[in-house]
Amino acid sequence: MVPSTRSGWIEVIAGVMFSGKSEELIRRVRRAVIARKRVQVFKSHLDARYAGLYTLSTHDGGTVEAEPVDCSEEIMGRRRPDTEVVAVDEVQFLDDGIVSVANALADQGVRVVLAGIDMDFRGLPFGPMPTLLAVAEIVDKLQAICVVCGDPAGRNQRLVNGKPALWDSPTIMVGGRESYEARCRHCHRVPRQDEDQTALL
Ligand code: ADP
Ligand code: ZN
Image (cartoon, rainbow, N blue to C red; front, side, top):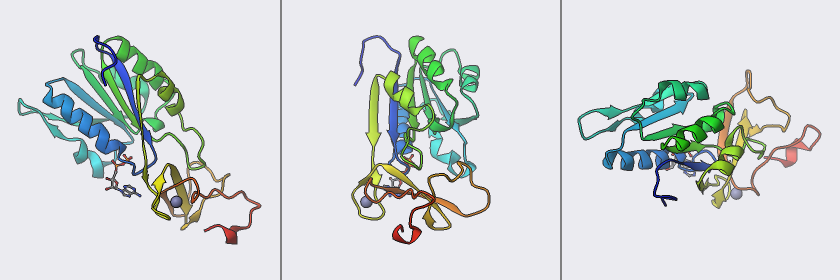
């Protein structure tokens, strides 16, 4: 797994929602803590309900907690000089500056572990993820289970009021009840405005 004897590289865990990216990120962080590395975990859009998920105990009786960040620059600002592993979850919501931040940290000898959704609800590359996948030394793409047919799922199905969201629907929905499902390519639906809605469930 380790690409070089010198430390400092980028690992990306990519995939659809529910594919286990956070579980895998936390597994790697836990192992780094066992290896007595100094670790910092960041998460964009930290949801208080999940904050506890990222709380890990260290040997010296301390804890590693996820620190919420709104932009990539904040990671550089909060990074402690002795940190050896930087893990970032929900990286797709960060600005494109995360690419140079990740590269700079890796160049400085930090192991950078990034987890994020690689496609938006339309199936198009999402935010900084495609570039991060290109610059990373190690890439893992995880799949969920398609809730329609049970095959491996790589797509995020966006539903608005229980129906597939239209291709042109705004990225942030106002009103309407929005939800997401993991689906495979064949069960994924993104109807255009002029398509027959009755054929698409
Ligand atoms: P991610 O960070 O990729 O969104 P998580 O690590 O938060 O994923 O959650 C993964 C967990 O979600 C799985 O271990 C499983 O228990 C649960 N899960 C819920 N729906 C699905 C699904 N459709 N396919 C696979 N796992 C699912
Ligand atoms: Zn399917």
